[in-house]
Amino acid sequence: MAKILIIDDDKQICSVVSEGLRRQGYEVTTASNGEEGLVAAAAMTPDLILCDLDMPGLNGQEVVSALRRDGRLGEIPVIFLSACMDRDQIRRSMNLGGDDFITKPAPWLEILAAVNARLERRQKQLQKMDQQVETAAKIFVGMIHDLNQGDTEVRWLADTVMETADQQNRIIQRVHESLTASHSSVTGSLSVPSRPDSVLVKDSQRQQLLKLSEVKALMADGEYSNIYWGKDQRLMFRKPLKQWVVELPSEQFIRVHRQAIVNLAFLDFVDKDSDGRLQIHLREFKQVIPISQRETPRFNRCLKQYQTR
Image (cartoon, rainbow, N blue to C red):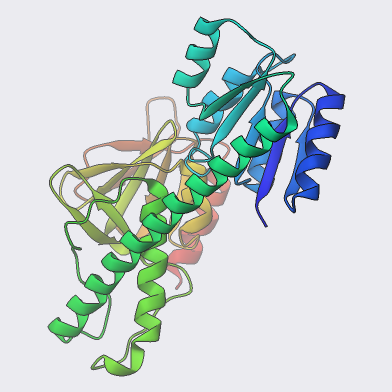
């Protein structure tokens, strides 16, 4: 059952459209303004959003801009449903990331047709993405078979280009599933962890599966993160630091301030700057990373636990 979010400050529109969509078998959630809409979108991850353009607080354009900056919600199709007749305004709205524009009042059948068309198109896009991921996963597992390796230390993957962060996450998950399914046919013993021990990183020339144990630090850059490993090797990854905090092993990767996570395995020493604040030096890493006062107690506690392992 497809999930649809309606964001509109007009209660009558919300009521009529949501009731009609529910009768068609859709799961519908409504929000009365842009702020509520973004919270609802993050909570439910809808398959489609119907959004009014002119609302108090965040308007429809600002809502779509916020969605498109979010790595998890950025691909959700959005249909603007608005009484606006200004062609320049409509064009600006579509350029910001809208997928369709319906002028209200609109016939119910026109709304339903637009919803069905966008959901069908989205389903085809997801199916195509799954096929690409499935192909890449099979290539990866085949490489392990050919190399007769009993672990996941292969450092590179096929030249298939993963276009979005969502595709990268899907391929990591699919590879783990494929490795588990083919466990009995691989020479040696495969140990597939409950959480990925690698991350797929890429630039314009190549992509490779980088083991998390080799990552020295992650530095925030808006919704992106810079990943550092090896000697002066760095790549930008579309994932905010707050998401890495949840995914990385907390006993080894410590957030030392809002802009940085460090791998304790590469800790060289800790000293103080001229103002008496703690700062971290990592092995073969040029940047000196400060520790915020807020994170200092937790860092000291985690460091002590890590050293006694």
